[in-house]
Length: 506
Image (cartoon, rainbow, N blue to C red; front, side, top):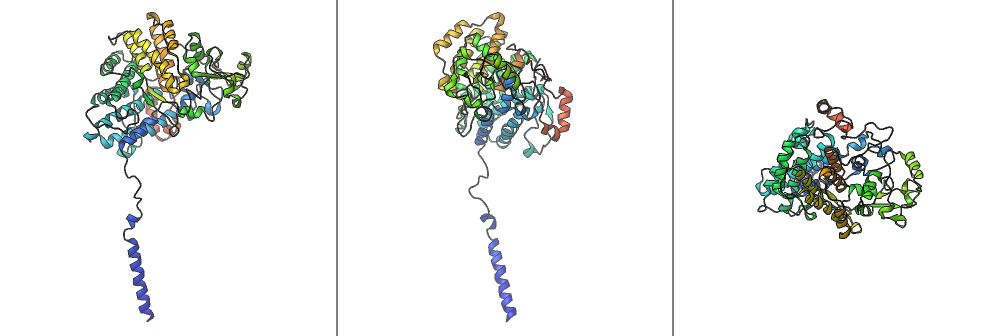
């Protein structure tokens, strides 16, 4: 009897375990989790992360071009002392490879053979070209043809391509993608940049092509001229309504604005060269950009009750000072402390919801002014494009914040007092480009190296490593993991330091 009971118990246990296995996979599958994502949303992720502002930009690019500087060391060491700090030079590398290129390469591999998503494919190629342009302008030789395909192609140690070959392919990509955008095709309404507006995407693509062409003005003038002509014929951004701009909000904050409104709020200041350049020409943008907390002795005293936008009262921080030097120079100038120097206003231009401008009408018109001055295009006059570029940026200030709006009469007065002069045209055009690219550190840095304008005095800090910073250094993580390919790139390009120039910087 006991044997029969045990047998029955065993049968019941086996039956129970079998029933538990039935539909096991279904029971343990999350039915509400996404198994795939619309590539349009992936493109949005890449586009948001392409916004050209970051903590690293504050430490390096904007300090290199002498717009914003910090007297502090530690994590803020960089362009303030013309010293290498790889914790910050890696910023563009990580930002664009991880968040932009990784997504764009994946999108392309998924939809390149799907004719119904052709417009999305071309839009992705344009964003990818934008990301790669910032990467190669920052570092020179970079992984390009083998970048971002670790998952799809199992390439974990990508080779480096020369900047010359990268630019040749970027020009091809931008020309092909811009031309292939089709207004009769599917409208990608989920697109956060232009809501799928093909005409605007075309202008964005051709404006990037114009930028790429002008970047080669000294390295390959023939290719530069040909590229500029194609971009101009395709149609570029000429009004602020077509600007390529990331509209940040409380959920997707402006990275640089977030930094300047948090731990580093009292640590970055407008430079003396930038403030004086605007002040000496009675530029109305100074009052739209700058704020000074008069008499502030600490960061906690930088309160609205002390603020002034009066351009006559703005004082930029001189270059080349560490914390102790800034304290002394402030005392020499009769200021309460170095907290009394002018800042880019973090409640207007540098607020956490400030827009991130990728390509603007101002920049494009100024590039056309130079192209016309060089004789590379024949329509319009350099003076007309110059005026349009200056005017567009002054109007653009209101897009940061209504409190930065510049009255039309002030714009007209400035333009009338500062006409383009043939003998100094290139200097005037590119000095305006410098102002126009404020808060877009990578572009300001790139065009400064390309054009040589504005004319800036080297950072006089006594412990500087280089006279001028010409590129950013490769991340230590890349050197340790992909050492063979990094080494080959360094052998071909030059030392991995701040002084080595990228290919187009002649």
